Image 1 (cartoon, rainbow, N blue to C red):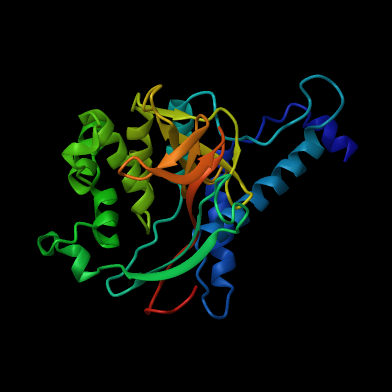
Image 2: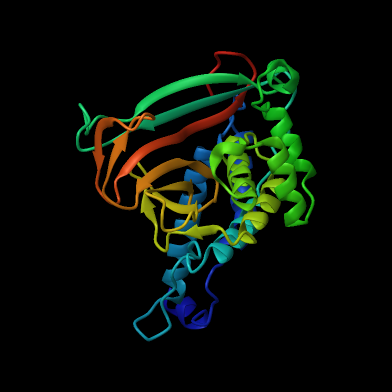
Length: 315
């Protein structure tokens, strides 16, 4: 090890994006070795990817390490210097992830956790409420906008991502057409388009990797998107990257969209109080809930998402 250390003292710092392809090959080999052909949803992939990155980083650190200045190697992490840098990095990483190839007749299994907290809540320390649901990938109801249900099917969202152009303006228009906003929201047209991009990020599963990369690049070009300049703890206790639409100084809460810091897969959303506040009902009467600055007032976390072959089947 001493000889190798001396020979490889100038080894370059490993780049996370370069490791993605090898990581996915490793995961693919693990899948092929399973007698049942078990599927890996993105959370399993994220865990395996993180373990791979850590193992490689430790190995290289052993080879390159030392006490001298500039000799230690740190594993690459998310670039939190700006939303643009972060989202461009996310685009590079997700573009190298494997295409899922969903089939008509499959179902999307979703396990979510919802949380709500506040100093005056009856149970402010209650655990997030966990629920499960199955949604048909090519749901006939969600395929048809004429029946009053405007929520798009997962197939429509997959095809939307797969067909996105390289032009950010064109992507914004297609997202806004998929997720139109009511006129009484008080948002500007640009803000409504930003929320449509974020709605696509929130709702789309399974994910077309090249399409998601284009969506991230459209968000990177959006001046209304900001990033929290440090990793945050999501309501489940995990580190996450948080991006959010900047609605100006009048906003009392911030809607954060959380990404896995290693794979940049979407994890969920949370609302955070940007100042102390008291909740009111729509008629202006007190709702009996108060929140301190920085407190998570609501969350919806996607604990598990996976394609399955039947309604009620679990991955």
